[in-house]
Image (cartoon, rainbow, N blue to C red; front, side, top):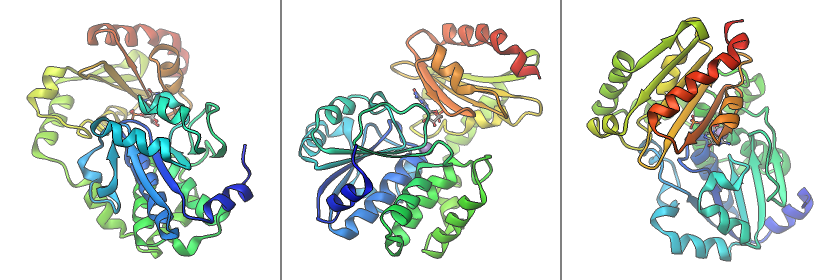
Length: 336
Ligand code: 5GP
Ligand code: MN
């Protein structure tokens, strides 16, 4: 493991740097990556962001978006960048399986690997770790890393601030989850002072739905929501055919699970979707209920206590049946 002095010495000269984040990047993944990118380039580093897969169009406005390389669309170029990198920043994930095929490339690279993350149970593949599960977003950690470790607050310009604001806003559920502490609000205030236009970022991210997306949401709520009062659980399940009927693209299903959780008394909500290659689950919970426990034990996944995800290679029907069959194991926690 490297210490901060050694890392600072490395960053003192321009380096070839790759920044990567988890597959299907969300606002925090892409916001922390581009926030760090916009910081590093001010020091003359040759930085590139590589995402394992594509990400929602409503993040395309972010400064630095034009240089992002999507791994699945540019495999050879990405592999070369990773192989030639002197430093690799791994943001908003802590297990190489979260970056798909890119994981093997990062693993064999001789670059210094820096993990900045807020997920539980990090895997040991890094040389320097800035990790705190109490952080509401990795973007919060990027801010703290730049300000408190690198003592470079002056370089938090409008571009850096806009990206980090987006990461914190999206991962904290627009500043409403329990980890949105007063310290987070102070950071957010700093980001606004540095040029992040808060109301405009909310517009760009949240008021940018297509008509199809909104109608799909209506379909999910009117026709696909199932409430299981005996378990204080609600689920929404969607087939591949429905995704096609509504022309659903990356990002369109984001946040739908929260509507199921918004029902009074509901402690656990699930969104189960049949994607082309496998079935994906998104779980959300209130209070102490460990959504990540279900994902980890039964669905090859994990995450945070109140927001977790997983997947299965079984059919959609089987996954739904399995999910329901698990609920009795958690009945005490769900009904208390
Ligand atoms: P989402 O439901 O939005 O896909 O994911 C919610 C949370 O669970 C995110 O913090 C994400 O990092 C985590 N998560 C989602 N899928 C997986 C997975 O397959 N493995 C692990 N370890 N975490 C996941
Ligand atoms: Mn995050």
